[in-house]
Length: 414
Image (cartoon, rainbow, N blue to C red; front, side, top):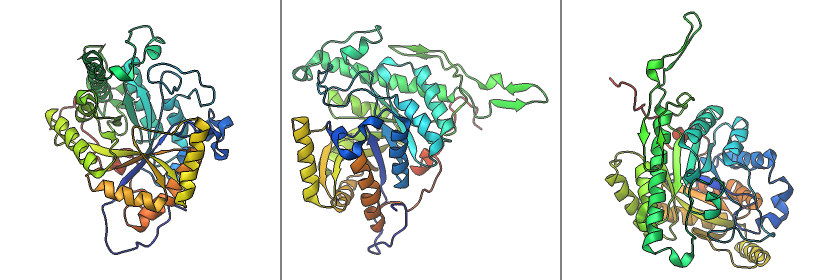
């Protein structure tokens, strides 16, 4: 079992790292669903997701993220494709997390939400509810979308066509910057709503008939460029006070994604391909964090990698090539793609960790194969190196990451 203790291989004690996995359907490779272990008939069942996330918990991972979107998956940047040989369709990530929460006890649950077309009030309530259902293990991954076909589902705004060759044009750069600034506003409104009930607002005194102290519920009165929110929430303050806000950021768009991390995130996912690039990314994010006046606040940065893991490196290469042949093209990613053994991956993670990364979010190429390879191969290897936990040391996601429960911004502090 990956959660069992093992003797360290040496007396040295390297810094422990944090591990998360990003779950996306059958896996991150587009042909993953065709593997025998992938259970394609179960992809839209609760048991499939329960099995994946409980396996991640057996491996003592910090948290899982669950991908989501507002349109079908596509091999094209800005429009649906006509492919019928790849997985299309999803379950709602927040509802998956809520279903699995009572069946797990330690692992963090971080569903993806597209902030561009969802209301801050609704998401604040949903993630607060998830924090209650999981007893303090909720987070959210916020993302933006400028896809025209997704906007057409809602009819409230329109976007220009997105083309790769136009990404560096001033008009599109301005749009992307505006979208990320909107996500920052979105997060601010959500955070205020989580704080809109003070921790002791619920009295629940049967004798006096007082359930709530109305003076401890607060209007948030948020006014932004794209929306305004009056508040307060209808859900009491979550168990963690503030569930963790996370986001993926690349260095494009004039630094807007890094600015989002610096302003708004507790955890940022970044995609360096080597140590020097990781150091440059971390420096850029820390600069944005300082500019936002958050230099003293914790901001964890996780490196993203797609992983093809086998005990024999040749087998990993062969498997990737076979999947590429099924897909009809070589797999590429925004993140570094690792193909090899758990021992080799442990070496790479410890090398990249020297840049200052807090931990890593691994994207299993084939969920049914590479997730168990992480929990049953990589985790024991890191444990042997004294580089990963042997048991869960906290019952909340904030606790696992060593983050304190924040004070309520509206409460009177003495």
